[in-house]
Length: 293
Image 1 (cartoon, rainbow, N blue to C red):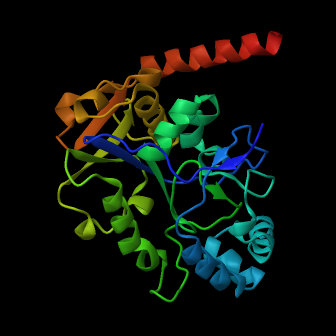
Image 2 (tube, helix red, strand yellow):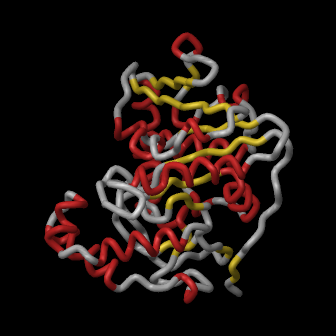
């Protein structure tokens, strides 16, 4: 199979829905089976941050990241050996597409490795991953392994932290995604830490920001909510959802829309104990069947 860098994808129609998602701390850098890839847009900015990170001792990097000695050493070595992206012409053991490299609960919910070529192309147009190092990523943008969360206070040439560094850039980039005319929906399935990196005052007023809230037995439970964000991305991608009305039909893994708890710009989905138990039983059954094969 030939590897290729893809620079352009089909432009969506006049009504457009774009999702924004957080990255993940955990990474899977095993060689990707998907050939199609692209380059992050803000590599110059990422290089500035890498230079700042390289100035830090391993101890100071540990303090910045708030991690163990082992993870601090791993990322100290990563930043010291960071490679010029110009050398990346295909996925390797150093570079992998963002959507396939991130491996946290949300990404396990997305199950991007099962996407068809058409679904990957759709996600390339309709999903953006907010990122402390790269700013904003398309799903097929090649990334190197790193650890740098948006909320961490890395002083830089634009201010005291990464919010100061990225805020206006991210808003302008999101504005540019939408056509000049037509309905514009920005679906927030990112965490608060990441979504507040977007300067909403700089966002085009014609863009409607819609957030999704996922509850289990009436409460937000982080471990389930993270996966549910990924499930929503999968739902939108596989069904080509393009409106708020269609979003309300989200029903994966037992979630249902709660009209009484929702507003026009805040969609709440609930899952009962019974629905969660049913889903867990189904997963256990499927896992057991696979183990017998």
